[in-house]
Amino acid sequence: MKPLTVFLFLMLAQLGWAQNDEEAVDFAVNQKLAELEMQGNPLYFTLEEYCIGNVQMFTMPDGSLCSSKSTYYSVSVFWKEDDKFKLQKFDNCGSFRPVSLELNKKILQVLKNSHALQEGEVKPYEGTRAEKNAFGNMSVQSCHKKYRFVLNGKNIEKSFTEYDLSNDSKFPNVNAAYNNALPLVELDKEISELLKNLETKGRFFREKQ
Image 1 (cartoon, rainbow, N blue to C red):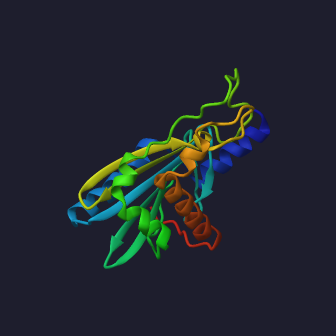
Image 2: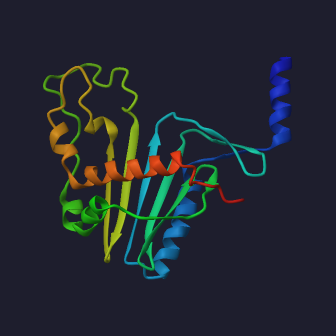
């Protein structure tokens, strides 16, 4: 074993090292959803995000290191509590403290229209001409999003890839305009911007494990 490798191994062993996969994330999220269900919460939903092959590493509150075992998964759980909305994030390295927030009118309007969310389907990328390597070097080709809604007793589950929304391949995507006009995608744009702003403002703090 090379000296540098030995040093790195000893350093990681001293700091502590954790690796968790998708199953660990799902277990924690399902516990949260079970809690919301037991409370009879009429409105909650989740957003799962991951990009195949994207591995991330974090320094935990106790100083230890945590890395996703393979692909990094992030799940955001939104729910309504006492006429206010809350959000809690989960990822391969554990959970974050719940955050109180205000959802804008666009998000609330889409959530009220459960029928539109249920009926609208994101269509796959369809180029104006066939292409041997349609993905090319696009960074979004393997990025996935999955929503699960519980709206007044209705369960809705929708998923799509960012590639299906794009128009960046060699041949234009004939479904791009249709996909981006869907209520689900409009909601996703607002939620993504909300999460980005919270991240930028440093609103997410990890819970001690």
